[in-house]
Image 1 (cartoon, rainbow, N blue to C red):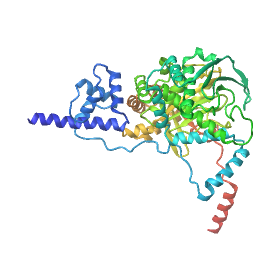
Image 2: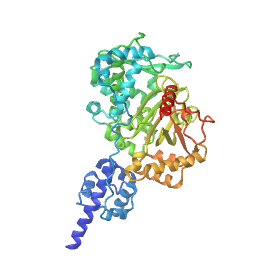
Image 3: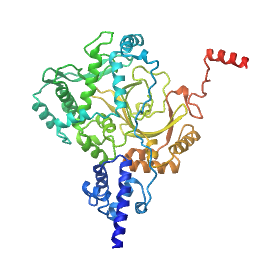
Image 4: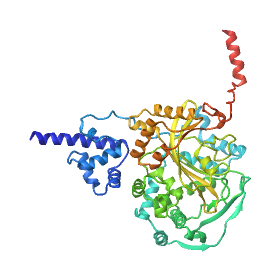
Length: 519
């Protein structure tokens, strides 16, 4: 009897520890089951069996316990002692990108902003569409790129089917009363707002109330064809196909107004069209990659950015969708075009922009992964561990970038990355100590160097816990120090040869001199 009581007590503590680790790493029971099956299909538990283990009603086999220990990077014996780790701080990015206090409050009233914003945009040369994109990005980042209402609308149409084939998406369109018509149109040169002309291709557009026009060139690319058609299904479902949205275009002008408008002033439709573009693109991604099933798909492939090739999903969709479905919330995403423009940005981890996405900056840091990839011809994914210094703050990022071509044939670089510090903190690792260890090694190497053994081991452990394979890949390469602007280079050996002197504003100099004489 005493032995049976001991087994139950042991099972209780073991189950509690597994549950604590699972919750800490934001995994559902289904997520953990998938991770176990990924390692060993025969020993992998069902969701219900995992639940019984966590509640102390079952004791896992030695093999299953070893699998769980490997996932969470613990020794198997740790699960049998009767101590729990100290509770860790919730690392959810409640405000990843910091704002500013709007004081005095009356100056930021709705009525005054409505008067001031059009003039501000006119004086700075900012178009209504550019301004709308800034608003939408702020909304994305504040919402951690999770929009459950749009997810539910997409799941109601797609019935959470995954993967979807081209024929499946056409069948959905027909069920909604939509008609498809093909057209032939090659790409054309469009200088837009840059000195370097880009190819521009009109891929598709919607004609109210129910007609979709598709460029026949999409027939040769099932991944892009599925996305465009899903995008127009979104317009039909979300907006009843009223036609108030822009055509789907690749290349051409990086920013600017709607394709049917040349007015220099802000128009309410600029904001409306930009928001509808965002809504429809999010719906299309949720339709083609439903949250739970796609999360499991990414887990099976360790978040490989080219895993979408197996199910006819574009790399753009896969990389953007990662931030919406991953249990780890600290992501960023860039879609970069030469010579220095960002078409799409998401910063759920607060990473600064390497460029402006409205105007080019004059002194970008050339050590960001997107710059390196733009200057190569390789089409293979590349991982990079980076220490970023911004003022007194230090952060550690890992990203994977890949050079690709859009539907119009323009080269660009897609980059998805994570902030690693919260992952260290969640495992009770001193993140700042690790960052400074890597930074010191980089400075000894002139800005880039191999990662010290202790830090590499920590990164490999985090890669296994998060199940993001390219973190481990990046840990075996040289890490590099990056910054927001080259003029503020934080390297011991300054990139520009010599750091420019920090100038105190002349007014402050006069004030300080007067005060010092008074004393």
